[in-house]
Length: 253
Image: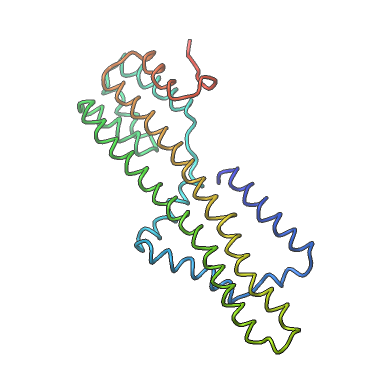
């Protein structure tokens, strides 16, 4: 799992939990009807807003984003320099045995088309479609998470209103007003926690990881096109280094 995400979740939920425990009995923050209203309501509204397949699909998108480790750009550049040298010395068909060792489907697909002799323009068109739909899937996942981040506080407010109505019906007993008010406010607490500690931060991280993955895909595409054109390995290296900040660029001797 992404280390920053893990640290952030542990810190945010841990500090809130610690504050609750230090303030008294933590069980007063557990209310089953409030949980049903906020959790169930948020999921229900999301299903109304999006097709079922998209809501289920976002689970896979989030999983791949947070648990799938991306290759380092410097490692990818080293790979392409090696491929470019091999193709220049022995011909592009010499890369065919390398394809079986590649675990990245995008890279394997692109190099396979280059080895098969497809025109660089055709390779670029096909691979750019792959990149565009990858970005679209990630954008949809981030959008759904942001939407849930907006619905959760709204469901919390609905739960609070329900609790207040029920409290006002029992005004005959003044001693019950305090506990009833506390229970009414718990739904707002649940909604705020879900939105600000889970859904919205996950949407932001999803967007960031999407940009990182798209950058790597674009770098791979440029490397594949350079190899298919038979460009000099030094030119390939300079092109791929252009995708990185100056301080991260490495130039081979």
